[in-house]
Image 1: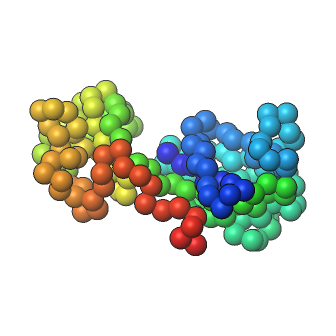
Image 2 (image 1 turned 45 degrees about the horizontal axis):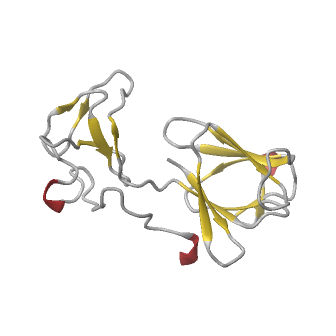
Image 3 (image 1 turned 45 degrees about the vertical axis):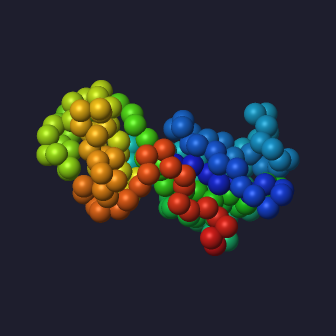
Length: 170
């Protein structure tokens, strides 16, 4: 799930999960208020966490650059600057969490660790790096099996761990 890192006044960052398909980014004052006019809106374009930024204020910037025609596709770690609001960074990083296995385009999911089918609605984990699904049940703990890396891409993630990146690294 995509999210925004928002700079706080104390030098830290707050994280806002982008759970809905559309998120208004009002101009100041900080913090955002529901009745503030939106300077820009983040809109989810597809199920793969592609997001577009629609700017209604010509002063909105992505990575310090004006947005041509008021529309930009934002990418992981892009900085979003809205007038009167602390800097924000868009991120597509996810945390490995158990959730119900989805139905993807009518196809059965196949676990890369055990090679068995993952039934829709059963407990499973999507790798935060490659987004490939693994079983995660008491009988088939494929994602956490022996602390092994992802069965598809080889990355290693802790279940319910922390974000690996934050804007402090920039």
